[in-house]
View 1 (tube, rainbow, N blue to C red):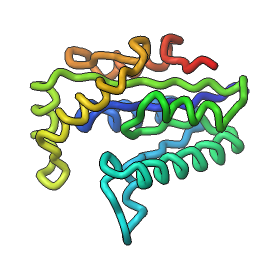
View 2: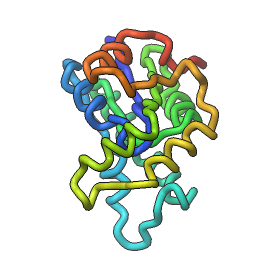
View 3: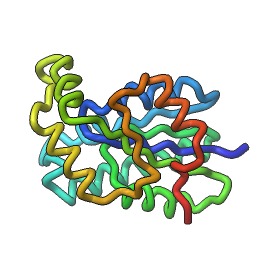
Length: 173
């Protein structure tokens, strides 16, 4: 059976977790990898991943290892984390299997909507201006246009259907 890895990226507040969880729930056999949990496994010497290449690389090494393990046991995988195209390409190269589809999606949201969504989070999870900085950082990385989806005025179900059914998000060799 062909498997799929969904890499759902975007700034804090873009809807990565909501979208990723719904996708994972729709799949018959799936694993949901929450990148923030992988990040917070490091206690001593923890560094902010956006400030530390070492820490960011370690997070992606662990995400890729978990992904491979779940794929070996016939699970589709949904990765919920701030990812760049280079991360998706690295996952594709590590898997190196033509029967496994990799979909990379960057959720883009207008700045005002992003801050509004962030304000709805519990105070200890609010990112404030960091949401906007994250959005700018993602856009400055120049992700391929075909992997972007602007969700500002979309319902979550429509976003999920678009990701699951549209082949434009597939990472090619």
